[in-house]
Image 1 (cartoon, one colour):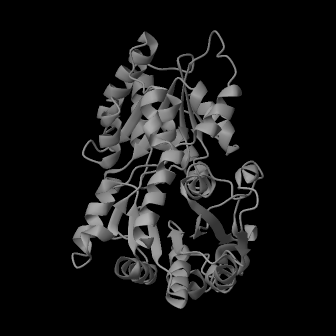
Image 2: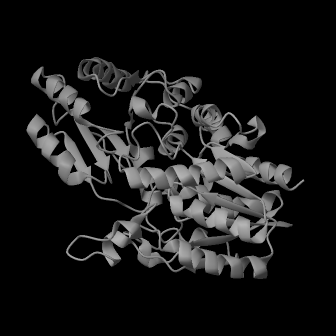
Image 3: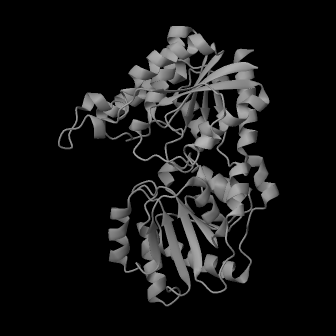
Length: 412
């Protein structure tokens, strides 16, 4: 059994939906493919929301170190203000101090052959780069999505910090891994001096064990209820702006196509409830749209399984990204209505799985037309769905096998 050190901010007891699953499932399944992991993560005080729901999925006996970390926006703020230097590259920059110190101790004790770190918390890559430099171990940087875009991050200091970490990964890591082909192509063009063999793609996925437990808790659908559509997870005000969708719902409501007796839309754990609530009320659709709080992960999966349809939002400026929840949606086997650019990686993945309910996120008229057609197809029983067998190629166990093969190639 070979050994690898996994560095990740997102790990139980952090309470999130899809984002936390990548590292958690890698740590569970890598031993099946010849790699024993240890995990270096942040102290739970750094998390804004915690829960015990997935603590039982952490492999028993696996070395797990929770290094010192603070959230500068909460722990280092005075009257809501904090020093910018404490939040570069992100609000958990203090994790670098504890992560490097305890990471070195863990390397001496555990003796891994390889270091792996994962974004979207940039400090994880800063820790990974430092430990790789100090120990001489090969480093795999799991970018998932791009760290920088034209105009992102908007703050100049944060952008400089991100660019420095990104370039360090491109130049020094043994492999740089993305979750979509589009992100890989973009980085290959951005850093033409980097050998093409350094870039890799390992997509996100779903976990069959979670779905099996979630399925056992799905109650029978009541005989008479409105069609229930669910969006599960964060609705970013820019990258997943729901206002055109709200405008489309308002137009359909005025025409009498939808009402509270026919339709119920649940926005679960949007992350921006106050903002979205103001838009919902302004559109006059509060009787159709419910802003629902965060729930435990398997309860969220059960809600997907029980829904009549699932909603996916992704703006054109994220064409080379695929929301992690899409793979859970595919496994849930429910009809999917996607508000995204037809030219993006998200739309390509949907079409590859036989799903065609795709409209542009920023076109309220197109959304209204497509949504009316989508509701009719659900009621007629003709809306496309993905079978469990077809979704199986996106399993987290399969992704772990891909990662193990990548580790084998790096270490020879």
